[in-house]
Length: 335
Image (tube, rainbow, N blue to C red; front, side, top):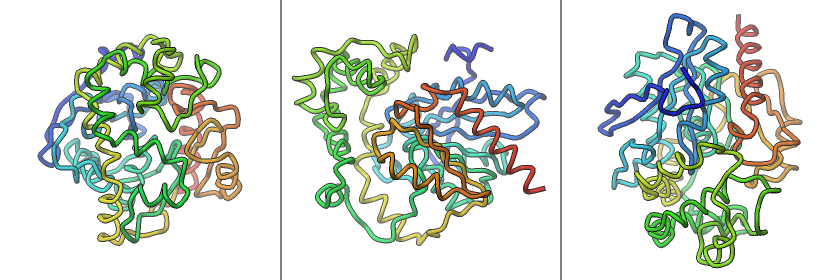
């Protein structure tokens, strides 16, 4: 199998809670005896961004299930916004594991996938052996309804980009122009040193970005590398409505979590968090505080030379080594 070729993967389809789901399934041979990993991607990403991490995990003897979450890469994009919430997709993940006769596994999530993994642990702790969170550390479930508008109005400026990406005008713009879509991904999947023009991350996709940044953007990505065109094609084929719908349900997310009254404390015994210095959503000081609070059961690794949000693409070998080391250590300590 060629892990660097998306066409080399076995991508399957099944019905999960009434929706068509697509997922990659690798390492299912007799050699995959050490257990299973569920790898959950974020926005605006695809299952294939896990390919180099998955290669390391499979080589170490694990099976990897890598779903395309709701709205991505041929997994269904329903009109019902509730199906894009963290709680509902976590329920989908649990049902997918049941469909595959996997009683429990190690769960790894990046970006939105981190939040889905967290809620999966909250709803079905028995299904999560070890929880690994990339980019978004553990955030307790909401206890009352709130909106992204109220958070931004109260000073959460690092979340302003979500107002752009949930906007129907942004979605129509990106769906109607391959040129704009290519610039969108080239800007997001770039290292700071590669940006042709200085711009505010919070503005990517906006009218201002279209006028001032898009014309100067080269259509390439050193993170996606030769898979840049393949990545863009997934969103040209399946559209941006589904992926951007995740940003439309902030208040609905909080309502569902408040109604369920999920536990505030981390619901699993072992959790690893990996945070890069280049991550734009949290400050480095916040990340360091998470690392300083580490213990034998809940550990945070702060990668000071990490440049971007795309951990699995930027430093896949390092990410995989931390995951395997943590799983190995926690397995020994639980004996």
